[in-house]
Image 1 (cartoon, rainbow, N blue to C red):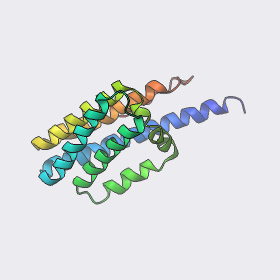
Image 2: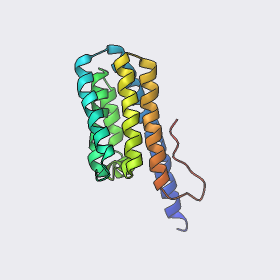
Image 3: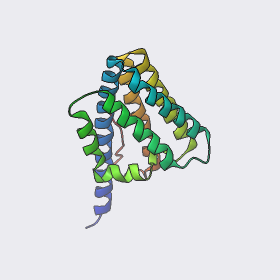
Image 4: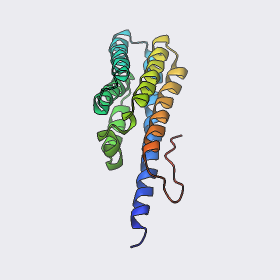
Length: 169
């Protein structure tokens, strides 16, 4: 069928946009709850992960999957520290979707050193807001982190003929 491939690519792009938007909202909720819980024991490992991300981002030889593993660990920590009943399971369910596995497996958001640096700065803002106990700022910073990640992934994708864009809310 003519243009079948273009429709599949557009659907995958739309699916990725929706996944990024959902993950941004969920990570934002988790960051807010973490900040409001003021759990110093959970904050120490997050600070350590953020320091490790900054060190990895400063090294131009850092492999994207290595940096991606640090970001995933930080996301999991924030989700766990939020102490929500369902959020972790829902967040992980999104990780199992085909389009997301493709992006995650290639660490597509972290292929450039500039992208890794931006992510490390974003994670620092999340951690600082959590440490201050500022739930609103933590939520906003976590959402921004994933919006920036989506933009980096979008920059790598070919333009769709119908103008479809990867834009999380």
